Structure formats: C-alpha cells, structure tokens
Length: 432
Image (cartoon, rainbow, N blue to C red; front, top):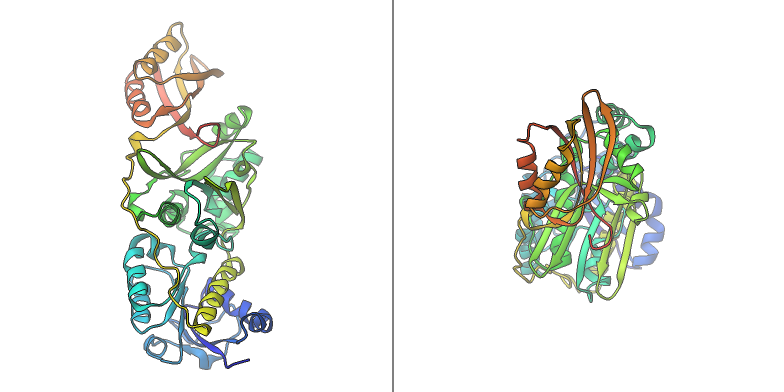
C-alpha cells in the first residue's frame, strides 16, 4: 500500500465534523478499498479555539486558506463551509492549482455551476458534488452515470426534510403550520430563520442541479418557479386525505416537446404513489427514464453523517482517479440549450377551497367562469356550512396554468366568492 492521499478540508461545522468522524471510524476499511489511506492534513476554520463536534488535533486547524490551497502536497480539497462568496473563490483557486474538489454546496452550484465545471474541465480535475442534493441519497452519480443511457422524462421528489417533517406532523396530528414549525425549530429540524426551507428556496436550488443533469441543459436557481408551504392549513391537509391524497412539497422537473419545466410547490399526491409514503425528515427522488422506467431513491436527505457519507464517497472517487491518473473523466453534461417553459404553460390538476355565499345559483356561476376559460371540474364537494357561507372543495381535470390563473382572477372579483382560501396543484397521478 502506497502513502496517504492528503485532503484539505474547508469547514468544520456539521458536515465537516461528520466527514472527519466518518474517516476516523472507517479509515481502515476505506484504505483497503482504495489501496491507499486518506489523510486530512489541514482544516480551514474561522476560530481555532472554539469547541468542536469532533476531536481533531489543534495542529490541523488553520485560519489561513492559503496554507491549504497553495500546498502542492494536497491534491483534494473538500469544501463544506457553505455560502457563495469565499467558497466560490477557494474552489476556483483550488481548481486552478490542479486540485480536485469535492463540495456539498448546492447554493454555489445552483448559481455558478457552469463557471465551476468549465474551470474544472480546463484544468483536467474532478469536481464532485453528490452531497449537494439529497444528503446521503445517491442521486447525482446515478443520473450522470448509471442512467446516462436513458432519456430522462421527469425527476420529481421530496428534497427538503424540514418541510416534509412539518407536513407529516400536520397530517398525522391535525395541527397548524405555525405550531409544528415551532416544534421543528426546537428539535433542530428547522433553522431559527426557516425561510429558505419553508418558502421552497432550498428545494429549488436542488432541483436546478437535478434538472441540469437530467436534461443536459443549464438550469439555475432563478429559473425555478417556487412556492412554499406557509399558507397550507390543517383543514386542507385533512380534506386532501379524505379525497385520497397526501400533501407534499414537491420538486418537479419535466421535459416534453415544448421544453423544460422546473418548479417547486406544495402538491396533492395520490396515496398510492410512492412519494406519498415518504414521512418525517426523509427525502425521496422519483426518476422516470425511457429505458429504466420508474425508479425511486430514498433515504436521509440531510444531517451530519448521511451527508458525510456522500462527501466521503466522492473523496474516494477523486482519490481513485488520482491513483490511476484519470482525473476529469466525467465533466459537465449540459450539452444543450433547451427552452424553459413559462409557468403559465404547464399543465396539471388543481385542488381549490372556496368560501362562498350559500344561495342557489352560486355553483353555476362559478362553473361558468371555469367553463369560459376551459377549466373542467372533476369533482365538487360542499364540505361544511359557515353560518351564511359555504365552503366548496373542488378538483379540476388537467388544465393549463394560465387558464387556471385567469379563472381565479375572475372568481376573486365575484360578489358571491368571499375567499379563495387555498389553491394547490395535484401531481403524481395518471398523466400528471
């Protein structure tokens, strides 16, 4: 067995600590698999004296990135510090120095992926990022390698554990969003500022990465339509269950003859769909290809050790390539410039809850508005009386988004419609 392959670790927070811990506990087995040991030779931190989640020698710690980036004896840089400022600078510098890079940074890849991949290809080094989507779930390598012979039709999934935990608790216990969010924060499943999770931004960054790989065209974070879950109520989740659906925050990427659609929003999913059973903080990514058919990747989408599992897997792949002098074999796969469909052009079904005046002719006037805009109703249920008002729950057939939005705009102005209380798309059924 030859000498160790040195690693420079940028960041020693939750994920960085997990990487160190995993290499410590499984180092011997990893060395056997590689034929060479892996050694963390330097770790970049902001404060060398703070308490750590994992035990490391103080001699490994540095606050100077140059001691890592300029060291010719460190061929692999692992970036787990997060952010898009310093992390971008350090990764580009590492690549320019001929170092391979492993990163878990979805924010950076969703905005600056092209720049980073172009730099890696020009330098002939690896840029691996399995941990950027789905934590410990293998999905990047399967899309880029195992499923590369397919034309991918769609990638649809639950890619944010915080929102899935909140929706699971709301569904099981009939509790409201704000109460469950506070509980998720107290348990560490949600950040003190949860906006990136609950408004769909985190999921949108992940879907930009997945869509770029799946369809071979560059999708960035601003391209992804997104809605969050903060307006969902326990009442709507209960109605959905009665109708045979679970409510999930879905990331959806599809390609058809009109182009690519990439979106993140709450959706009703039929209870017999595999994604409906994904609970708590777990993630799942459902992929459909023309050859493989339907397949799903399931597991823990975040956390120190699950994410470290993906990072260390990438480190091992980079180390193998260094050992065999074959770096840069699989570069950026965004070969095409495919059109991105506007949100108004997507076609799906809808769930609506309306509060209306309880008198004859109201349903007919509502149906008339929908009919004029080619919105066909699949079912109409009057769920409960609210004094002189009634609550209507409707499910549409498949319809173009713009038609639906036009109809909602007219309904909002009807005197008999007191509130459009909830509008949620329906996905995962036949043809959708």
